[in-house]
Amino acid sequence: MFTKRMLICVIAGALLGIVCIVGAQLRTGFEHEAPYLFAFWFNRLLLGIVIGLAAFKLSTIQTLGRGALLGLMVSFAFYSSTGFQDVIGFIAGIIYGVIIEYAALKLDKKTA
Image (cartoon, rainbow, N blue to C red):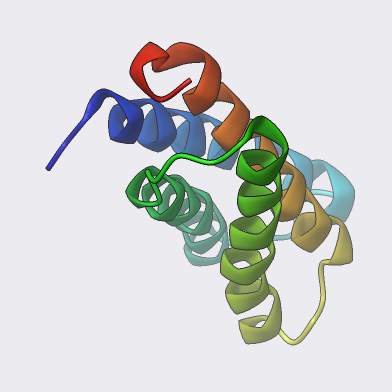
C-alpha cells in the first residue's frame, strides 16, 4: 500500500541520494563512475522505502532510533559491498535514516 508516509520517505530518500552523489564526487575529486553513483543513490532510495514500510507507531525518540538503526543496516549493505571504502557515506546513511524518519513523523500527521 502506497501511503502518504511511504511517499514522504521515498521522496526524502531520493533527494538525500542526490546529496550523497554530490558529496561522494566532491570528496573523491569526481573519480566515481556512473554505476557506482547510481548504486549510491539507489541505496538511499531503498533506505526511504525500508523506512516507509516501518510504519508502526513508536515514541518520537524510538522512531528516530529506528531511523538510525535502519539507516545503519541499509547503509552497511552498500558500505560492505564496496570494500569498506567510504566511512563518511556509511555514517551519512545513519544520519539520513534519522532525517527520513523525522520528515515522515512531521509531514504525515496521522502517524505523529
